[in-house]
Image 1 (spheres, rainbow, N blue to C red):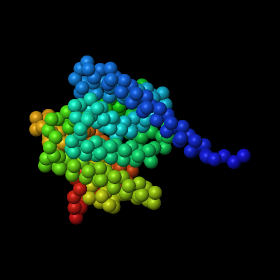
Image 2: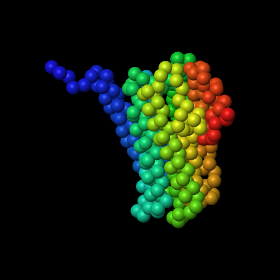
Image 3: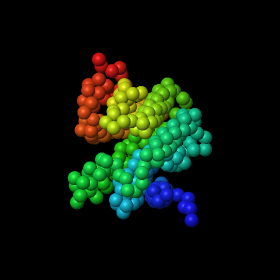
Image 4: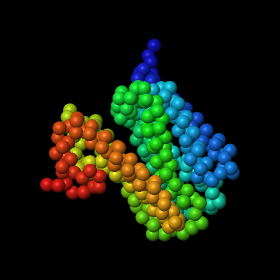
Length: 299
């Protein structure tokens, strides 16, 4: 009898079903906690607690299936329910302002786009990001703790800090559209576009590249990490919406600053080290091309 799909496709389908189940349960737990606590404490604390418990659900699944990459889409998905939760429990949900609608669309665009990009690249439960594998191999006995704290709760906390700007937007009495909102739109959409284009350019390059060939064209010719530049720009764009809501929200800069530090201190150095080891020509590329901000190549 002819089979309709290969074992590889069937395994990938089951892997995505496991991932989907994990995130549905995480969302259900978060919604339940939010509903039970929303009248008991400040709404920021409620979302933080719900966020942590949702992360713990994903952690349990990643521990059971020995695959920390199950957590990867959490980064892009979390801002959407956080924005919706603050919208629903704010006084403005019955009559959203132009700015609030724009922010919802931008957050949804960012989250859906980045999640779909992860889906296209994920190879199933047997595949784990090289960075997680590195930590697992180097610290086998303590990996459960590294996974829980450093690889899941830490990025969850950073995304939460970045999402504080969304709280400012939906709990603001200022409904007018100002120049800071315009700046927020430009920076966040530019970030999403930059990340999208660079990801697509890299994907096409990987399909046709020869062995040992380094990606140096397109946006990758003006920045060594254009996708990271786009990611960070998105979070800074959200911060300008918070400032527009009220200048007293300046302290929410802790969100984009923390995310920027993560990329500059951990993500970029790890990637640079790997590329230098794998591609001898990367040292020359590194001398000519800006590490982060897109700029003209040095001669």
